[in-house]
Structures are given as C-alpha cells and as structure tokens.
Amino acid sequence: MKLNHIVAAFSVFLLSSLAYASGNHAGGHDETASIGQPGKAENVSRTITITMHDTMRYSPASLSVRQGETIKFIVTNSGKIKHELVLGTDKELKEHYELMKKNPDMEHADENMVTVQPGKSGEIIWHFTKAGKIDFACLLPGHYDSGMKGMVRVKAQKSKTGIKE
Ligand SMILES: [Cu+2]
Image (cartoon, rainbow, N blue to C red; front, side):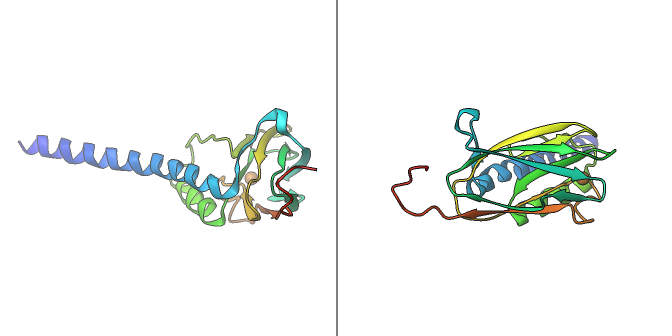
C-alpha cells in the first residue's frame, strides 16, 4: 500500500518532469511562429556566415535581414570547444538556457539551432516571416552567461504585394 503510493507519487513526478521538459521544447515550437519558420533549401535567398569563437563571441554578432527572406546560415566553430547557435526570442532563449543548466547532457536539436564541434561548420536555413528583433545565443552552460549572444534585425518588407525582389 505504502510502497504503491511511493511508486505512484514517483511516476507522477517523472511524468510531470517529462511533460515539463518536452513542454518547454514544444513551447519553443509555438515561439518559432514569432521568429519565423524553418526554411527550405530551394528558397534560400542569401547565405550568411557566422563564426563562433572560444572568447564566447559570434562574429558578426548583429546582422540584418529583410522580412520574407530565407537565409542559409553557415555557422563555423573556430574554437577548440563545442558551441551552438540557437535562434529564438530573448525569453525563449533564457528559459531554454535554464533547462540546459539543469540538464547539461541534454541532447537538444531542432531546426532553429545547430551544435558545432570545434573546427567544423553547421547550418540553419531559416525563413524570416515577421519584422522585428530575433536573438540567437549559445546555450551551453556558461557560454550564454559569458555573453555568447547575437541579434538579427528583420526589416519590414514594403507592402508591394509581398513579391521578393
Ligand atoms: Cu558557446
């Protein structure tokens, strides 16, 4: 009886923490609506290279795109340790970072992010659907706190029936 209770309580705990973890990532999917959506290779309008450094900096750390553009980001790690680039809202990145600090070995992969081993390159293809400011950051423990962050400014497209130039 008592043991059953403990087991029941434990599975509720497990289930809720699982729900929390996946909920957080699922929440990320909702959030992606506000930062745009995964892009298709055939729609890429421009390629932008971003380099990641062990000084916990991206170069460039700020860039601008136009609403409606599909950008292929080539993300190069020039350092000796692993880095990543995650696109998101400031709020989403902070929440995700807290989760990463609690679970440093958490495998996380999504279309709005790329993890790059030292000396390697990865890519993200992203379609910017809304004007505004989008953040990106390295959410590996310590990196975000050290300022490994950047920003994409998405300029509003002039309303010319939305045709890309
Ligand atoms: Cu990093």
